[in-house]
Picture 1 (cartoon, one colour):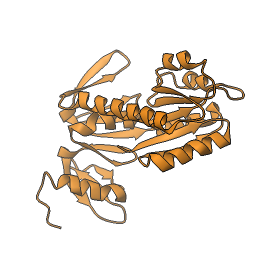
Picture 2 (cartoon, helix red, strand yellow):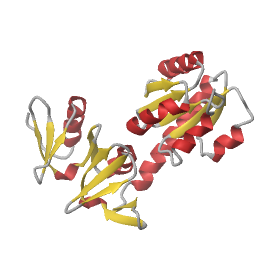
Picture 3 (cartoon, one colour):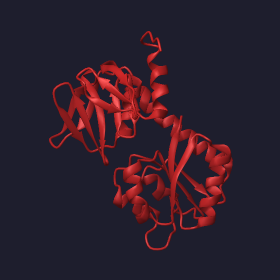
Picture 4 (tube, one colour):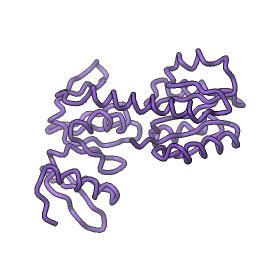
Length: 241
């Protein structure tokens, strides 16, 4: 399971040490970027939707808990890494996955990351084989048929869900829907698109590859995901290339 991460710590040496630990022992984790303050990280978190935020507590200006003032309903898992033991209770009140004390013990870090993976896997299994998707709207919770979703499209930190005859705008990032819908036969073709495989008509070659859906909608397909998609489709169709 590939995971993306952001580090927030005012101590550059601590950032470098954590990056080295992750590089040496956790090849499946890609550190997108690191920051020395909460405020400087917000735009990147909103745009890149990391799976994990490694977060220090005591920092000049705003402490680590200020992150949850900017993002009260985080879509990422938080692992606090700090020199201070006294904030542990506060950390778990904001639903952090773990609270590690510096210097970092690689075995404890391994346990934290295992919990992140287990939670992600559990969420995916809960969604598998369900026929409807619950989405939050202005008036309440709406249930839509998963079979009627043609594709999902990222729109900053929101997602357009394109159904057979209409579309819905939901205040959740595309990554949330990827986790829920991939077990249902969906595929992330690029950074901004998640498609329902049953609506694919063909894959269009060219300077930039595209997936053509049955209604002739063109969906961008990254080169790195093209081979993965063809391999995935090989289990469902006869391919003669």
